[in-house]
Amino acid sequence: MNRTCTHLHTRQRGAASLVVAMIILFGMTMVAFYANRGLLFEQKTSANQYRATSAFEVAEAGLEWATARLNEPQKIDSACAASAVATDRTFRDKFLQHSTAASGFNPVTAPVSGIGGIRAGCRLPASGALVCSCPDVGNPNLGTVNEPRFSVEFAPVPGDLESVEVRAIGCTQGTECLQDTTGTSDARAQVRVTLKLLPALRSGPQAALTAGGDVTLGGSGANIVNTDASTNGITVDAGLSAPGASARVTTLPGLPPEASVLINDTSLSSLNTADPTGNALFRTYFGQSMANYKADRGTTVICDPGVTTCAAGVTTCSGGTACAGAVVTAVGNAKNQLWVDAPLEFTDANVPIAGLGAPNSPVLLASPYAMTFSGTRPVYGVLFGANQTWNVTGGGSAVVNGAVITRDDFNSSGNLTLTYDAGVLRKLRPATGSMVRVPGSWRDFNL
Image (cartoon, rainbow, N blue to C red):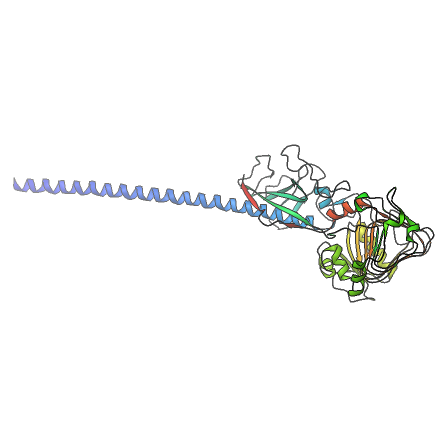
């Protein structure tokens, strides 16, 4: 009897141990299950964070790409590549669409999203070389390859015509990356920034002709014109004298011609005599030193090594006529902001039939040397001669639409028509200079 009870108690203790072991095993299984579930959750969260971060980085790359393109004075084709086709435009002119009607930018309103009627974009192949699209209208065409990509669009800034909001959307994969479509990407992000124009010509001249020294209009066909009411019709502003100029000017109706000719302007003559380099006068209109203007990314530098030491990488030329031809070639390639370390001699032979620049694509041309014109081809823009006399000589009839500034004397011994063109100056301001980020304007959004 006692032996039987002992076996029974032993079996009961074994059953109890089994139950406890099973409970512990079940608890450990549950712990392992929830630990694994947490691990899976962390993995998914990490993957989502990685994709979201990648989308933001791609969108930020889109902002940087768009900013660089806006500051690149180069005609582009539909693939955003450099183009030599006459009818092609620069990235800034195509997407910001500034005109002679108003000073500033006018991005086209989108038919769907109300942000930008023309979008550009790129996809990022594994090879690293961007594949981009810059259409004339509508959305970028980047093909059906499933790769990371971004699109950029532009919006006006209310109350500030010289600022624009750039919005970039980044996608980690898929074939569409637009704000107003869902797309097939597993992560999309949008970043925005406001860019402000830092103009190359900060303060436009208020006279058709500005000279720090004497103005001599020796040609019988010389005529200086300014019928712009906002500048009071000032035709000539001379630091010293301008004998007989009033007989060669056309100004506002009812205003005596002599009243449009300002002479002995001490502010100009003092800049002329105090700074023979022309840098002080240059700062007055350009708001920066000549060295900074020359070093600006948007400035095309042309240099004659026979005249001065030329930096590496600049366009070189030899002689005044050849250097003027180099200017014409650069302008034909949409380089509208130029600095020339060489005397310039513009003639019919080195200026094309269309002239230098155009009403919708004027030029900003500065040089520390003399400029001579002896042709009949028109010039559109602002010309600045920093150091020596600005001459119009020879046959034909030189035509300048815009304004001329020279540190020293201005001489015309031939036929000349110099017309102050407010429309050209309005077009020139947003077409030159740099687009820079406005501090505090960067924003990001989840899509």
